[in-house]
Amino acid sequence: MNYSDFQVILPVIISFGICVVLCPILIPFLRRMKIGQFVRNDGPKTHLKKSGTPTMGGIIIVLSVSITCLLYLKDNMEIIPVLFVTIGFAIIGFLDDYIKVVMKRSMGLRAWQKLLGQILVTAIFGFYLVNFVEDTTLMLIPFSGGKYLDISYLFIPMLFLVVLGTVNGSNFTDGLDGLESSVTVLIATFFTVVSIGMNSGISPIAGAVAGSLLGFLLYNVYPAKVIMGDTGSLALGGFVASAAYMLKMPLFLILVAMIYLVEVISVILQVGYFKLTGGKRLFKMAPIHHHFELMGWSETRIVAVFSIITTILCLIALMGID
Image (cartoon, rainbow, N blue to C red):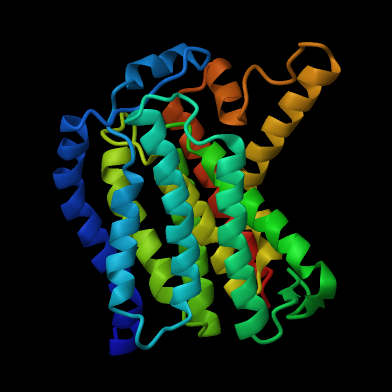
């Protein structure tokens, strides 16, 4: 292994180490502060035992990634917009978690407040892309042999659709122990490999996210000792969306973030079907991972299947780059 190879792997190792060190420190702190998971009564009954599990663990993920990125900012300025979006959505998630858990208001931020915050972060990111990134309206087309699609004036509307959809898809995915962490560590690994191949400059933050999630999974797999909460799930969605745009690869999210997409669509279909039929349900429960739970699947089986699907789709996406 030469020095450049080690430099590629180092952000993963650093972020992993920071996360592994922080978890035993912050998890007991969250428990002492009574920052525990609130479980809704209308969810799967098996989840009632999760009540009180320390939440807002996303703070650990964001800290691990941020500290690691500080070591690479000087030579990789492309990290800044991705880190901004990641932290920006983490703040929105933190406020939502804080209101729900600490202030005991079960719904957290009001829908319009959360949406306004998400629009603001996305708008600032869009401003950066338009003004500081060359050929920003170009998107790499999967399996096209390296051809790009120029969407011109549709760029901004699509940016908001993709970013907000990805962030909320990530949020919906965070419903089982280890599910969001397992799926997103694979997506982060995909972006790490691609960013290295493209020499894009965002590989340190992509590797840092992968490393932090590997460390977090040690405490987040079933039965979870800590839950990331909206602080983590919104931050990770922000990372995935912004990384895709920095690489000009938002179209690839259809593949690598398919689980996010399916989770969002399942909720939309459930709500729409419920309203159209006057109370009937298309799924036993949405998001769709709860549907499989109520069919008798264990949490670990669902996480394994969704992770396998993401792995296969990431490999297919890698083949679709050239």
